[in-house]
Structures are given as structure tokens and as C-alpha cells.
Amino acid sequence: MSDLLERLRGRGWRMTAQRRVVAEVLDGEHVHLTADEVHMRAVVKLPEISRATVYNTLGELVTLGEVLEVTTDRRAKRYDPNAHRPHHHLVCAGCGQIRDVHPSGDPLADLPDSERFGFKVSDVEVTYRGLCPTCATTA
Amino acid sequence: MSDLLERLRGRGWRMTAQRRVVAEVLDGEHVHLTADEVHMRAVVKLPEISRATVYNTLGELVTLGEVLEVTTDRRAKRYDPNAHRPHHHLVCAGCGQIRDVHPSGDPLADLPDSERFGFKVSDVEVTYRGLCPTCATTA
DNA sequence: ACCAGAGCTTAGACTCTGTCTAAGTCAATC
DNA sequence: GATTGACTTAGACAGAGTCTAAGCTCTGGT
Ligand SMILES: [Mn+2]
Ligand SMILES: [Mn+2]
Ligand SMILES: [Zn+2]
Ligand SMILES: [Zn+2]
Image (tube, each protein chain N blue to C red):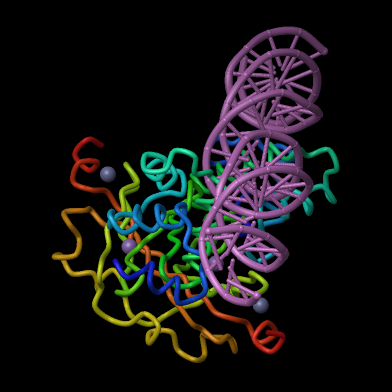
């Protein structure tokens, strides 16, 4: 993802300090940050960056397919820089941490035509839920 | 689900007009309503019922396992009275409608131990996304 | 049947995410 | 270096849900 900035420039993006910093934050952390977490980390590098710009930039990156949105609950959306290798997620119901997982099997193939109701099905998300080792023992 | 009220009484619930009405709304409609939609329908039967009570009652029903929460986007959560037959969901990206689907295969079995990171995995949600026949042609 | 009181309901304030707006700033081009 | 349209900003706004404090009511015990 280090060539993200190049790809963006190629798409006609103005290269601003703000966009660079948001890209750096996502590049550095292969985790699933909320917009406010991205903002907090961006502020360290560029104190005057605004919340609105972080939201705008994240939205643009999602539209470009460079970052995925992950919604596992009604709390804040999380932004996933691992957009280029398909995967699913395992979420701890206790602490909310998210891990990337790669199940075997193809859930799209598991949906027979008779269960598609004429929909053009284009995507499937699988969310596993459970308790991480820490939360399981602290329960 | 018509014996829902009985089960709830058995669990020590006080039987109030408000709870009865919420249960009736969910019983009557095998669809996926938002809390505000439940409230609107409840108000028809019991005009003074409050939004807070609808939220409280839905939350209790979810805790008891009588109703499922379905979060397919960042809009309002939806409440699913079909809690006793496992199923997954197919969501139209255009109009937001939700259908119950029953894929073959068991996604839980498809998650190898090496991909569980020591989690106690208890549940899996599969969300198919696509366009319904109407939205696919109107696109 | 009546009472006490725990449990339930209510209105509205509040929180949390995220979006929008209008004014100011700046990167890219000339 | 000037121009200009894209970008950024602060803060207002909105939607969904939670919380609170006060009042009401269901239920069990008498
Ligand atoms: Mn991920
Ligand atoms: Mn359902
Ligand atoms: Zn945990
Ligand atoms: Zn549709």
C-alpha cells in the first residue's frame, strides 16, 4: 500500500498534507480503526487537520476501493486498509476487537438460485462473533 | 410466536399493555422493522406508548433471544421476530429491503481452528448484498 | 378488596456518529 | 508569481439510540 499515494495522484487527486497524513496512518496500521482513531493519529502528525477532512478522505478512499468500511455494530464504522485480499472478520463481543479471518468455502456458491429471489447478488460479508481469550476468561 | 407472552410471563415479566402491543406488532409482521416502525405500529393500538418503552422492550426481547437484531448498514437496526429458525440475510443495496435466505453449508464449520485465534466463536452472520429485480432494472 | 412498593413507563435531554455548509486556503497550472 | 477551482475548516445540524428523574401500575401479600 506504499504506492497508494502514487495511485491517488494518478487519479487526479491534489496531494495535500492532510491526505498524505491520512494515507500514512492507514498504511502504518494494519488494524481496523474508527474515523476518530484515524483523526487522533493524524493530529499527531498534522495538528490542524479537521475531523471533516478525515471523514472526507476516508470516504474517497472507500469509493476508490483502496479502503473497506467494516460495520460490525451500531458504534463507529471501522476502516480497513486490507482492501486487496478478500477476507472476513471475527469480532469479540467483549472488547470489540476485530481479526481478519479466511474461512474455507465460498459462501456465494452456497446460496442456491432458489434463495436469490431474482436478486443480482454481488457480494457477501461473513462476520464471526465470539469472545477473545482475554474476554472469555474475564467473563 | 403466539405463546411469546406466555414465555415472557414465565420469565417473571410484568404483563403491561405496552409489552403486549410490542409483541403483537412483531408477531403480526414477519418482516424486519426498525424500532421506529415498531413504534409507529404500536401507537396505532396504544396511542400513549413511548419511544423509550419500545426500545426497552425490543432490547429485552433480544436479550431473551425472542427477537434478533439485524444491522446491515449504519441506518437503524432492524428487529427480526424469526429468531427460532436460523437464517441469513440478503439485502438490496438500492432500496434496502431484506430477505431471509438459507444457504447450504455451515460457515462456522468453514472457519478452521488456525483462524480462530483462541476465540470462543459462538455465532456467525452472513449478509449477501446485491440488487433486487426492481432496483437492478431501474439502475 | 386493598395496599405497598418494585418494576415499568414517560418526556425530553443527552450522546455518539456522521453529514453539511459557507467561508477561507492552497496546489497545480500558466 | 497570479489565477482558480479543488480542498479544508469550524461549527451547526441530523439520525438513532441511551439515560434520567419523576410518576404510574402490576402483582403479591394481607
Ligand atoms: Mn479486515
Ligand atoms: Mn430475518
Ligand atoms: Zn475481547
Ligand atoms: Zn431494491
